[in-house]
Image (cartoon, rainbow, N blue to C red; front, side, top):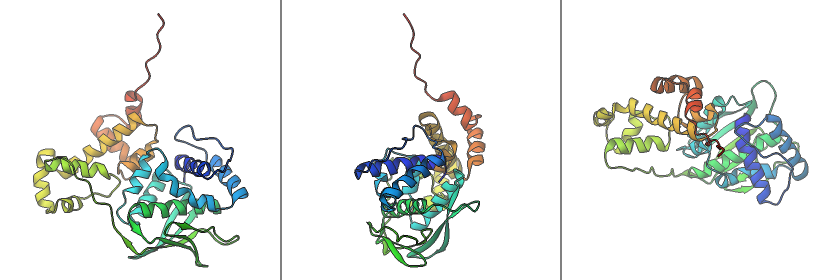
Amino acid sequence: MDEFASAVLVAAVQHALTAEGITVPAPTPAGALVPLAVKRRLLAEVTRTHGLLPMLRVGQYLPQLPPDPAISALSAAGTPSDLFDRWSRLERFVHSRHRVVVRAAGADQLVAEHVGRSGAQPEPAEDVLVLGVLAALMTAIGTRGVVVTLEPHHQVVYADGVLTPPDAGRGTALWRFTWSGHSPKPAQVAGTDVASRARHLLAGDLARGWTVHALASQFGTSARTLQRTLRPAGGFTALLAAVRADAAADLLMNSTHPLGIVGFACGYTDQPHLTREFKRRTAMTPAAYRSAFTPHPAKETRA
């Protein structure tokens, strides 16, 4: 993934290595951005000494990392296909050098390929790192019996949490995910009035492609009835825009996450959409808002 996403993955790699007693000298990401060369140098050193298995395990350590808005948005996916769609949107937001392209999808399986944007293909360590993260996320969203095979030679590398390193010299970029069932996590609804409960539902998964029909289904009512009920709050569209802007403002003020991650986590289509809609509500661009309202430590004064 791109520089920021690499920061998340580099942190996960280092955490996983530490947990397994593997010491690899590499700089810990100090901020949101990490040069691609830093990630590649770390992955190359690990795989040269320990093979690809540590990279495949990294996804299992994501829950132990500090909260991250991108990972939270991915973990809120309702189905495997939704997860891959969110991953694709995240890649577009952060201008990733690599892409996970879904080649085929069905009710209980999905074929995806990890490809480069400009002819530079991902390294095997990058392939299995992303594969392991996606497999772990599939389990986290309630998918049961997840099995991942490397195609076209049908080697099983992930079977319901059991990991097997890829055979040396075999391709690592084409993946087949299969699963036996899916039980999405129940939505948590808070508040007493419909508008408060709707706001809570929307805020709980802003990366979802919300529609008034999808929200109405959460209340067991029709879209028309929900629209009428939400009219005092401005209606569905206004409520969704307000919840997104509030969440974006909070991330802009209280985190150092890049605008691409803020936009993705808050459900905007792309970064221009974030900028346009945020300015419409606040009369400021996201960058200007962050600069103006980010809390700064009080300067020390001399007696």
